[in-house]
Length: 357
Image (cartoon, rainbow, N blue to C red):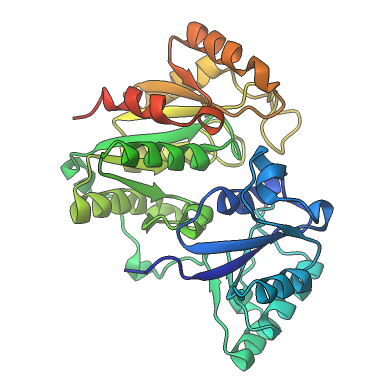
């Protein structure tokens, strides 16, 4: 099993930090076991602390305008960077020409590159040859596994006697993964054995030991891979709880990943992440977000399992109004509602443990 951390990382997020397209970088700034994050690249916020820009909480992770500055800073501080991690998550997962030039510069500086984009760096002839010349590794996290390593749904999920919690959302880029990790950490703090099953590239980059990249799999194997990874986490560790990171949402027109999570992971309960200020699906003007009650109804109808809590994404909301908003949503939905990014996940952990097998 991989020993963490693997190295010292600079996170590349030029032009996208603190936007929906920077969600991979956001996850790495907030938490990662895989790397020690040294800095973030985005010239728009150069000179600031990444944690303060993101959450108004210092993380001692500086933002730089260029890769050259970030590398020089790492050398000056005696923690030379070993990795450049692509923290961009644009729609379609494509890399711009200017970003590709920065990748070449990183390779020449001896940095290994981890990328979760659909544009595979290792299949770029120029970058691949350059990497071989400079003896660095290009890891394309989203690269589809060989078919011989993929699994078809078998029903072995029924062997799993851990409490399986799906952390789904009412939209994409709504904070499902962040809430899932905070729940995992709260359970660990309580002494509860728990495993996280990651379903996207960022969770892998954060060090989820049991991970798959849903949106790069062949469709026939998606539910089987989810089933296999949940089963593997249980078979190897027998945790009391398994938290499954959601993808997209049931009714998102482009990312309806919640269906596969429910089908393959067969959760016992669902926690639903929601951004009350959103009116339309992320990136799709003219596609109104379905009401929270309708989304809860759809999840419960499809899965036959209960949504047991709502977790809040407080984007575009006044922080002083969060308690009232949580209370209102709780009264209307009949479900306990928490802002775990603001207040921690201890109360959420207590709520889900009432369903422990």
